[in-house]
Length: 373
Image (cartoon, rainbow, N blue to C red; front, side, top):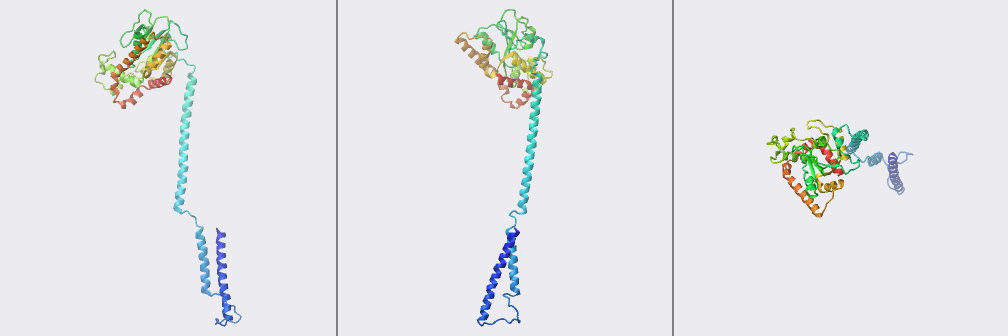
């Protein structure tokens, strides 16, 4: 920038020098032509300009220098510079905050992965044999070789409302059945051979199954929130098998908070644990293991698909198209009949989170069943 200022100043001086040189030459021409000249001292050299003109020259040179400096001032004002600086600081702060948050999330994710990996490694060879009642030895696992003596056992938990499955098997496929039902106080099995057994309690069944055979469980898994609402409706139905006079006058919200409400009913039913007992993650793992390795299951919302799956598992077949049509009608009527309790929860969306929390492990089991069915 200083080089430019010097060049501009030298240029101004040269320009003014030329100007006054021409004036000086002109003044000589005038003197030679005989015009009047200013009186001068002897041997003095006549200058082309006086002191006033010298001041004017200096002023013009200074103005040129000032103008040159003005042209080289920064383009940004102090205010703009401050804004730019603050913007840069803000961007750096935001980037640091985002980086810290991302790092924190990654650490949490890695910790969770590490925890579940260690848990899976610890339990990969665990068959939870010490978790189940001794009576559960009557159940055959899916890996056990099938035998013609194996006894299919359909599990219909209270509130699941899947009794239309055994009805279709007996009415449409002419299969004989026996029942062990806690809710109907029918706890004694007949001694005759049957094609399958219908029960609402694995604990009650296993303790009463005295045959020298293996039992194979099949069932429909239902959304625990819907099951809780349906169970409440059944208990308030005076004509229903589940009627409980203690529920009369109760609202669903209050019922959920009482001991009358079955919490994590499927998990407890598999492990034979009472409603007031505490469940842990290990209990969920044991229930999930039993479901995957000992039960042929489908989900309630896909009942027709599940029914076909049951037929294939036990080598049951439709004897005619009439039998197939009979099954379709029974399943359709059964699903429609269960809708009589559905309106209990229609306007109670606010209870969803509450019911989900009360059925923490059953909700996880149901999600797992949906993904595997």
